[in-house]
Amino acid sequence: MKLFSREQIYEADQQTIKKQDITSTELMDRAGSQIFNWMHLRLQGAQVPIHVFCGIGNNGGDGLVLTQHLISHGYHVTTYIVNYSHKRSKDFLINYDKVKSMTKTWPVVLEDNEAFPEINQEDIIVDAVFGIGLNRPVPDWVKDLFIHFRKTKAFTLSIDVPSGLFLDQPVKDEDAVVWAGYTLSFASPKLVFFLPETAKYTAQWEVLDIGLDQEYLMSTKTEADLIGKHEVLPLYMPRDKFSHKGTFGHTLIIGGSYGKIGAVILSSRAALSAGSGLVSAYVPKCGYIPLQSSFPEAMVLTDRDENEITEISFDLKPTVIGMGMGLGTSPNTLDAFEAFLKNNKTPLVIDADAINLLSKNKALLKLLPIHSVLTPHPKELERLIGTWSDDFEKLEKVKSFSKKYHAVVVIKGANTITVFQEKIYINTTGNPGLATAGSGDVLTGIITGLIAQSYSALAAAIFGVYLHGKAADITIEDYGYQSLTATHVIEYMGKAYLDLFEQPQQLPQEEPKEDN
Ligand SMILES: NC(=O)C1=CN([C@@H]2O[C@H](COP(=O)(O)OP(=O)(O)OC[C@H]3O[C@@H](n4cnc5c(N)ncnc54)[C@H](O)[C@@H]3O)[C@@H](O)[C@H]2O)[C@@H](O)CC1
Ligand SMILES: [K+]
Image 1 (tube, helix red, strand yellow):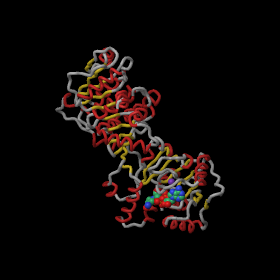
Image 2: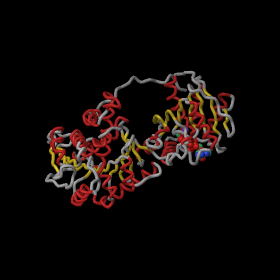
Image 3: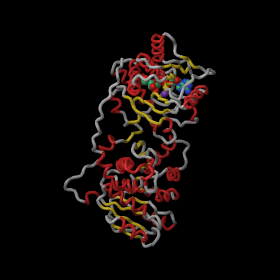
């Protein structure tokens, strides 16, 4: 799914109005009606007090359309105008008059220095104060209103975006943003719903289709894409009947040090479960027996040293190398790593201590083959690119890094983000159960195993992150969050693959009672 920017959404609105020959008021009607349908389906006429807070722009206008439907369907609704400016939008004013003519009274106008309405925890707040038009800090008294919303603990439904949340700037004051229980967003979810610092402002979100011009939406390229099943299916490469293990490549995993051989075992097993035809591991001598006995499918090569890697040399011709898990960062290992990079031509996936070695010796970065994949967690990323002041700056820095070194960077986190040059891909699978030892080693193994099968580096990163999260999502159905282990993720990879082709269960369609 594409994540459109604010400018693109405004453009989509304009194109829609032009091509469908409708007015902006009609488009607002669609938006407000969709919000109403969503609520009506769930509330079914329940007499819960609904407080609709409308700003003076088009987001407020959407709120006023919603109000009209709620009133005409007999809901218990109170409408407030959050009068933060006198520059009311045309479509706001049209709907403001409509509400007046329906109810014979004007909505309650809230201004600075006025008492805020009483709201109970069981009530519903609809937040239509600011939408994507927010372009400067929220006035203090409106911030106080948002604090009031939170104090009531009432369910808060935000229209389009939680008010106070900028689409392209960090939040400076978390009290100046509405904390939504649910956001109903038009055109696409917004990038900020997925970034670590701003995801918390909406617990859940959903996109409502307001019939924007399909041609524009289809043909417009976005800076960010959201990755779900629909997006990874075209990446999947089916297997030919006449294929053999050589067809699916040879993965070499290089890593491990005394006490950290398990990381290599996890990565190697993950590469095989992702479909790599052959898997070999290169470890210090102490890793030989553990690997051979726990993972009979792998071939094992050893360093001359017992406890750490001191020289990386082998006779194999691997298709791809995944390295860094459990590697350690000793001077001997660094020398081996540097010598290896100077001669290496094989595609690389770089994780953990291999990232740390690069961070401490930045000159080595230019030795990476193009389209290397790096899989840092936030601390490793910080060592690699330096600190950042907010998520937007972080993304910009990662993009520059990616461009400079032609690398694919996978930023691990709740919504793992893959960055390649100017473009970012946000994963939607995975769960807090993945915050467990070894899950990163498994991810690196999966991505490496996909590259072995001739997926491009970018496709392998996007698809690998998806499958890894999906396997974890299926695992928790059997094990729950707490008991999920990295080994489960490997074992559930098969189910993650099968899930790609599972038809969604057809639920009986519920219809809203009526809509007029
Ligand atoms: N443009 C369209 O045709 C459609 C717009 N829609 C709605 O319209 C919204 C965008 O509407 P607007 O562009 O009118 O903007 P908003 O309703 O988000 O904001 C209203 C106005 O407030 C002003 N403003 C911004 N920050 C302020 C601040 N801190 N203090 C005081 N004033 C401030 C701005 O000048 C802005 O235009 C969307 O989020 C969506 O909800 C939908 O109705 C669908 C169609
Ligand atoms: K809003």
